[in-house]
Image (cartoon, rainbow, N blue to C red):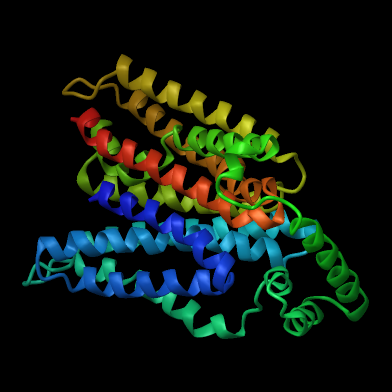
Length: 364
């Protein structure tokens, strides 16, 4: 089930560039919202396993598409001096979704209706956020850069006047025009990402950063958290409570990250965060290897292992998670931003397929 979701996520990442460049940044948010809404409803009402698996794929497709499309839109409607903080709000909102999912799942674990279908409500909950977004998307501004790129100058001017005062709007309007004039002289094909040296460097950097961060195992720890807590000797109820606490702590650190993300270079945050989370993983593995769970388990040591997992999520959210989306949106020139985000999100999805498929075997 985990691999099916991430397989859909890979195909969803392709839609980011195709729709965002052709029909606009808002449309690239609207379509995945509809996908998540329909698939969430069908998952909650699934009549058989085949139906569940099919819509699990489309749920992953819509969710991942949305995950990559929103930072592109945010990067193009926010002022440069506040871009890091505002785009990082996207990551904080994602973490809030994890918090809601964890606690709703824990709550329904203790609910036992006669029909034994308590699993349906948590799956249906995913329909609520996208319904709200679909209800307000009409009033959100389109990217002024995309509007000017597509010769819709009057609409772009209206958007800029809504986002800035008159003088700033006029200055940014001219800056965008000048930049588009330069962009139109540059290569923008998919092949140019490999053939042009400067683009190839960006491609390898995107692949390396997205691959490296996901190799720290953040999604494995989140998705298989109860399995990890079971290996540490905790009961079923505590496994779910710790999973909720893990995500709640991550959300809190994600909010704290808003205050530091623009104070340090992106690459230093990513490098430092990767080093620290790897240290916590090594410490947790050493504890479990030295004090394995069992009848005579060292409870203090296993609690130390649990603390390493919680330290992991603190530093992952403070330094890595939101920073990567900002980095990807800023690494690429304007005319290739959607393609760059597609490369990043596609890589993340493929690495997740790998880890989520092999993790159950590793835990067995």
